[in-house]
Image (cartoon, rainbow, N blue to C red; front, top):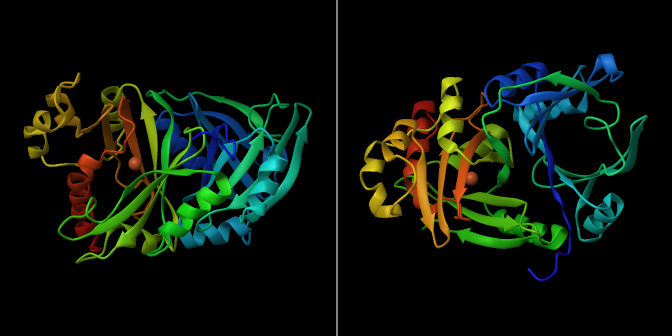
Length: 362
Ligand code: FE2
């Protein structure tokens, strides 16, 4: 792209709305190895809402929960279960970002506001995207505190497992809505369409879906958007939409530079991954050529490999981490490849369908 019409520095944090923020924070600390670095709640003067901040390298998660019945967050959690509510962006100029987004057709979620305490100021605003998901705009250039004004610093270290940053965040939207949201990301946030997959690329005997990968101007933020396509049975996207109660974030891909290490640790800590049949590995070298990793080790862990023109990538997907079959995680290790593992779609979706069959939702 020659000109970035909506400068976004990076994903600042990903906020989850959850029923029990203390338990969620504990889960992410003791499985994914995040450190709890910030807290906001009754003890810090927040009467209605509690927030835990978790960090690992360049990735920040926030677990937020309502403290009282009737809180607006509680309605949304009742509808969706625990869910990703905000993919927040760090920007140069919050007021400009908010006004420009609204002029380009975005709906307001939170008008620009200045958060302040003795450690400085943070500019904040937010716009709505698909479902109940929002994008916050934040600038903390004149703030030295642990997260946002009002939060106190926490020192509860996790045991990190090499998660570096968010690679991409995937949204599931309703049938016929993918192109609307593709246009929205183009028009409002100046994103461009990197790759498109149709139902011929992504289909199995039973299900199909369509997907377009959107990228921010500087390429640092990547959002694939999925919609269901007609199949013989209910697609994994239909299942998501039904259980989630609408459009929302389906998975967050976490980047590592040592996937064998990261996944070994996650398995040891009890995180469940989708399994592909061992036959997947019989023809792996024919499909992807020589790779640095030991194929036997990849097979034992269930790690998938795909190659494109620029290199290869290794990836693996957790089973849903929520009670509902909604949110899951991908662990991705890029060795040159900038794509999304198209060669693995079939094996992967068949694995998901085996899980759907167990849930009685296929
Ligand atoms: Fe992904």
